[in-house]
Length: 234
Image (tube, rainbow, N blue to C red; front, side, top):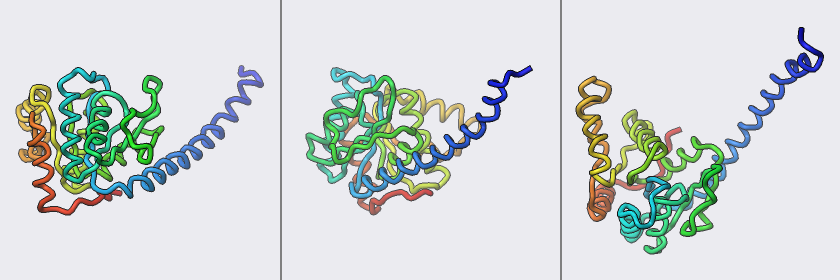
């Protein structure tokens, strides 16, 4: 038999859980409002993704700095997750190029705040990954994806899915580092297409390069024919 304390706990738990769920809706709304309010002002930007574990002596760190520097000199700002590694490198490049340097941080137990190269006026810290991902996509005119882990792949595949399903407009997606990404492309070509789980043209949604100049050219060529604007997909 249940004790009086157990019966009381059982009676109160659903209500308490409901209250927490309702309040979490307001927290999510608050993050969306802050994100929209700040990022609506930034103008055309490129989101740069990649591993937080990449060290400053890694070649891809330096290439991310160079890419972001060149992107900002073409008039684009740079959006990152605001953390270390490739994110820090991209914000550093934007700072060197005197462009807008945006950091969309996430509250995690093993990451301490945003990196030093993020513009304080364009720093936002999120509790919810899904809200943060909306901001990456909604206010980006393109993606440059450096070698990274699960988070990088999550952001890449969400973007590809949104374009594939026409929930957002097509924008340039560049995978930087052929040595890292070629296996994924081969698996898509030889397994996913073979099994019919993607269309033959789906691998045309992204480009693979090892050249900072080519990455910037792909973006600039695309916007020589299109006007950059936010992607309103809900």
